[in-house]
Amino acid sequence: MESFFSLSGKTAPPVGTIAMSYTFPVVTLPSGLTVGNFSSPHSFTFVDGTVLPGCDEDRSRALMLRAVEVETPGPKGTTDIALSFEMSDEVRDAVRAVQYADVDVVIVPLPVMQAVKAEGLPIRNLRTCRVADRVAKTVHGDKFCI
Image 1 (cartoon, rainbow, N blue to C red):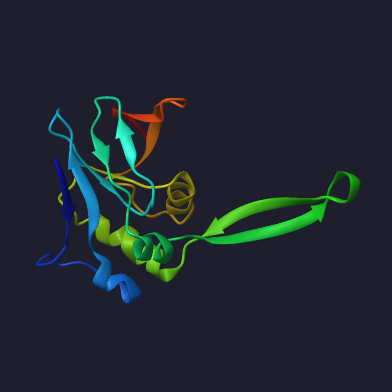
Image 2: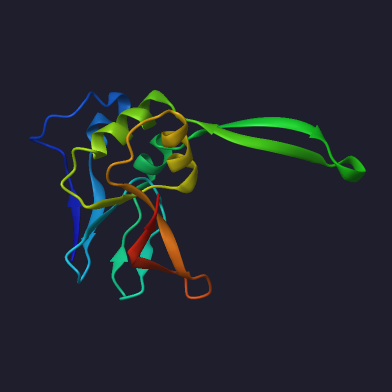
């Protein structure tokens, strides 16, 4: 069953420019587990066929990490890039806000999870998906990564 979770009526930290965008897609899996999509514009199809919709474009763009690129010369005139990511205040606030969501699991992109850990923020209900089948593009509903 697809729904959208909203933090309206809940006490949450200020969320700056995304305050109007507390809403994110949530589904309930047959197991009863509720799963939300933090910021991905792409849907997630679980092995049981349940589909967690992608977030709207505004939320996805607002919650992108800042890419930090360090360039070095590569082979034959190419450029090698050491890539890392930083959280903006908006992303940090949104990470904190979803901790108030009445959702069992909130799927975040791997770079967001890495940034959360690097900043020492609590993980609580944040998880990354565990791909079940790359070709079929399905994810597990009973296995998540931390």
